[in-house]
Image (cartoon, rainbow, N blue to C red; front, top):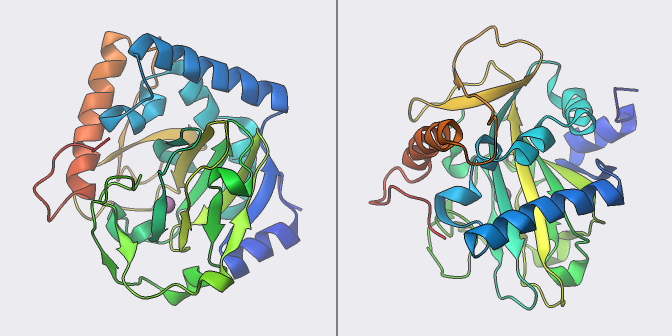
Length: 277
Ligand code: NI
């Protein structure tokens, strides 16, 4: 037994490349986080978009608190060990009745990280039934190593480059990942995954938090991350400060610096320098 996951949960993650559902927050806590996000969206006049969808934990105290949530970190520690950096956070929001989708892809494709010891915790801020465009996983695909991808930059695709796996993914092998508000899924950086449109009357809101152990290196650029548990004995990443207040000047500056750097890595080989909507 680990801190939160059982030995069988961890074995399943290693075998299949994912584990879910894990209860990260109570339904009430999830609701409170959703309220804070939506209050912010009302202030901004719309959903977080462009650079603001990424490294959100550098901008908002509640997003930072969640990236450091002990239950999430306990599960992550059971997979990657006690020293943990939060490398990035991204919202994947699909509005009610929206065509937004995510093509089949492996996260590792453009991230530029030196090892595959990278895990995503995807936390549901709202119920995410299959019809809302819940994620689909291709079990065991993390063992296929890196597959070839092509960029599409398709308009409704929520990924940075609209990247998709260049070979046919056997749809029948995909499994649905429905989650209740406050539950999370965990997935490996090489696991092929995607998701369809939201056909329900509610928003589907996922907060994806990417964690790495400090021995990982960024191969494409100078990069930064936030120490959220244990120690960093390597110093491969510049350590990012958490926000003292939502969108205060220091937070906006730290976020801009960090996001411009990561956009450079994620868009390398293209002429883009900013995250698209
Ligand atoms: Ni992904």
